[in-house]
Image 1 (tube, chains in turn green, purple):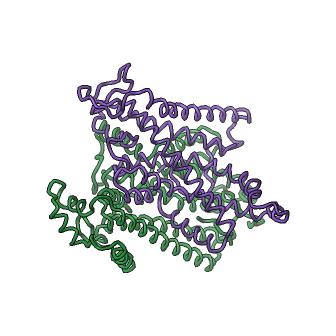
Image 2 (cartoon, rainbow over the protein chains, first blue to last red):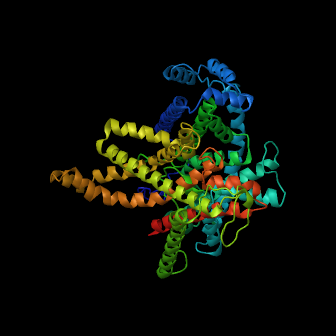
Image 3 (cartoon, rainbow over the protein chains, first blue to last red):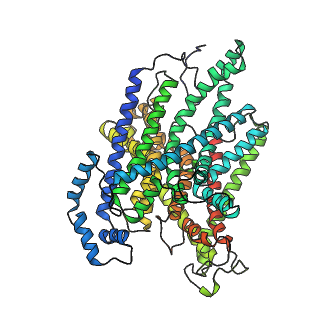
Length: 342
Length: 293
C-alpha cells in the first residue's frame, strides 16, 4: 500500500506510511518548542500593547473608573482623587510597567479597575462561558461542514455540489454580526421562538451557537469537498479499489485519514476566526464570556481585565494550534520541511 | 466568522468554489461565467464607489437634524427616508460608505507596504533581522485581528479614526509579510538572481526584474480580501460600540442605532446592511475569479 513517496503538496497527501508507526519524538519536541515560543511572544505583545494603553489613557482614567464604579452622575473630583491614590495612577508610567510585568510573571492578574474583584476570578468565570460557546459552535461547524462537504464530493458538479457551493459562498459573504442580527430579527423578534439575549439556559445557547457554527461550517464544507474529491481521484485509492478492498474499507483506511491530514491543519487556522467570532457573537447576544468582557473592558478602559481577556483569548488560539499540530504529526508522521503546519 | 477575516493563511490554499474540469460544462461556459462574475463584481463596486464619491457632494448635510421629520418614510426626495433625528439617511449612508472605503484602502495600502518591505528585508538579510521579524509575526498570527484592533483602539480617545486605521493596518501586515518572505527567499535563492549577482546588475535590478513580477500577483490576490476584512472590522467595532462614536456616520454604527426602530422603519437598518453586503460580495467575487484564472 505504500506508494512512491513524492513531495506532498498541501491538499494532495501522498499515502501515509503504515498506521501506528511510532510518532517521531523530535517532531513532537519541535512542535512544542515552536508553540511555546509563540505563546511567550504573544504574551509579550499583548502586555506591551496594554502597557501603552495605560500610558496613553485618554482623559482622566481615575474619572472613568470612578464613573464605572459609582455611576456617571455620582462622580466628583473627590471620588476621582480617591480612586487615583488607591490605584496608584499618579506614579510614573515606567514604575507601573515594572509592577505590571512583574505581577504577570507571577501570574497575578491584578484587580479589575471597575469592579475591583480579582481579575483571575472574573476571567475564569468568563472562560467557562466562552469555552461552552466555542466548543458547541465547533462541533456544529465540523459536523455540518464535513457532512455537507462529503455529500457535495460524492458527485462533483452535481446538484448537491452546486447547492453546497451556494451555501459556502453565502455564508462567506455575511459577516457574523449581520448573521446574528438576522437570526435575532427572524427567530426572536418575528417568531418569538427563542430568547435573543441572556446566558444560562439551554435555549439561550441556540442562537449564538448557530451564528458562530454556521459561519465556520461554510469554510469547513468547502475545504472538505475539495479534499475528498482530490483524495478520491488519487492513484492510491484507485489502487486500493483495484486490489479489491470494499468501498467501506477504502473510505475508512485511505480516504478519511488522508483527508484529515489536510482538514486538521485547516481547523487550526480557523481557531483565529473562531475567537474573532466569539468576540462579536458574545457582544451581540450579551453572552457572559471573554469576548463580551473584552469589549466592555475596552469601553471602560479597564486595563487589567483588558489584558487578561486578550491574553487568554490569544493563548486559546495558540493552544488549539498546538493540539492541531500534534494531531497532524500523529496523522501524518512523515518528516516534512519547515512551515507545513502553521 | 466568514473567511473574510482569516489572518495569515499562507500554507493552506483557500479552496476555490468553482473547481476545474468537473462542473459539467466546457471551458467556454466557465470562461463566460467568470466574465459575468467579474463584471458583476466590478459593477457592484462601481455603484458603491459612486455612492461614496458623488453622494457627499450632491446630498444634504448628513448631520443636519430636523426633529419635525422624525422617522419619515422613504419618498422621492428622500429615497431612504429620515432617521430618529430627522437626518437624511441617504446622505449619512454616502458619508459612511466613503469613510469605510477610504479607510479600508488606506489600511490595506499601509499593510501591503509594511508587509512587503519587512518580508523582503527578512528574506534578503536573514540572520537576526529575520529571526526577530519572524518572532514578531508569529505573535501577530496568534492574536486575532479583532483583538489587535481593539487593543490599539483602546489607546486613543474613544472614536478615534487614527487608532482604528493603525489597528487594522497592524492586524493585517503579517499576512503580507509571511507570503512575501516565503516567496522572496525562494526568488532570491534562485539561479536567475545568482546570475544577476554575478553580472553585478545591482539590487535595484533584482528588485525590479525578479522580485516585483513574482510578488505583484500574490499581493493582488490578498488585497481584495484585506479590503473586506478592513470594512467588516470597522463596522463590527462600530456595531459593538467600541469603534467610531456617534454622531459620525459609520455603517456598523448605523445598524446599531437603527435597530430599536426596526419594526417601524426597517429601511434604516437595511440600507447600511445592503451596502456592506454589496461591498463584501463584490470583493469576494473579484478574488474568486483572481484565484481561478
